[in-house]
Image (cartoon, rainbow, N blue to C red):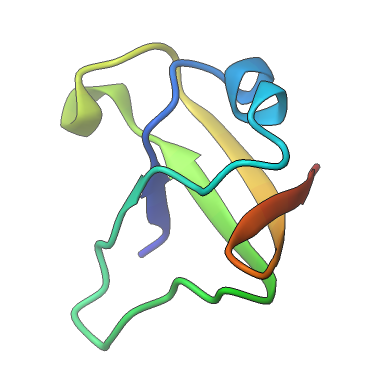
Length: 69
């Protein structure tokens, strides 16, 4: 599974570049979060109860969001 990003939209996620990522782990096989590097996140409104569905690749550096695509 993909980590859940706790943002209402991809736009809101992008507005938080430079901040810590708000997320929920979903994997049964260990943590997917990395303080440095890239990974995919999604918002699944039927699970998080917020906003619209989206997927994004997040690049992290020192526990801060560096880039969102």
